[in-house]
Image (cartoon, rainbow, N blue to C red; front, side):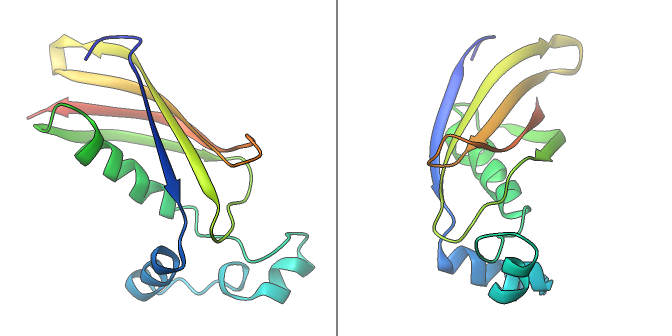
Length: 129
């Protein structure tokens, strides 16, 4: 891996992912589970939990990178637009820095929906074990 390398993935927020998130973490905020409540707040339907995207980030680090001997040091995420059930999300991460002194690699990443609207973006730093 080298600075400037770009990685892409496609993720879908399926019913199974959504239900498993609720089962595991018990977050039943009405914005996430009540269609009418979400619509009354100006959304087209119930909004998916933002932290589902953190699961996709974990998958990216653990399964998509060529180096498997790594751990997440820091993770930053900014939510920009809602994600809805069955949305296809296009993920892109680019290596923006290497820090040899601490054996770390920094990425900037973005999630976009099918309309190519940014739904989330941030930075991720991983380190070698």
